[in-house]
Image 1 (cartoon, rainbow, N blue to C red):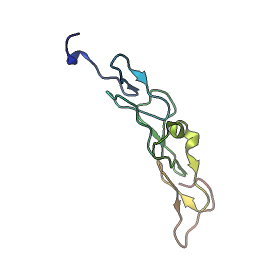
Image 2 (tube, rainbow, N blue to C red):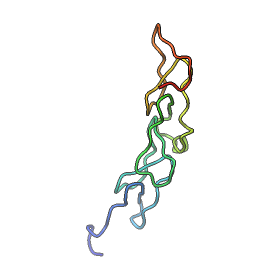
Image 3 (cartoon, rainbow, N blue to C red):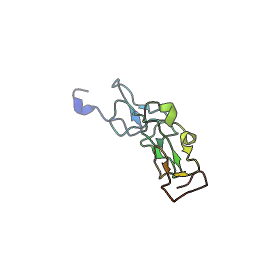
Image 4 (cartoon, rainbow, N blue to C red):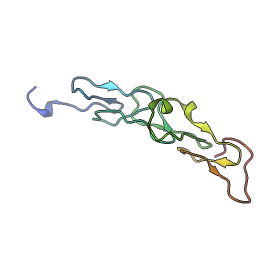
Length: 111
């Protein structure tokens, strides 16, 4: 090989920081094509399988507050916690929202 154009991007879900091999992203992380590292999933998202090209949103009625500082906090759907009574969330939420004055919800995990 004699030029940079001989080099190809790692596919989505993989990364290379050495230039010699593409490795799977770990659970809790993801990558698009050509990444040199795998970022941690962001608030309200997780990835379960190695080699993820994207992160999945927590379901409505659940939340995941970690802002992406720890892949271990984003590597399983069970890291999405259920909103308590009196609160709700949309899918991909980082926190639950308290019902407004004059309103209530007495179930947990409400969307």
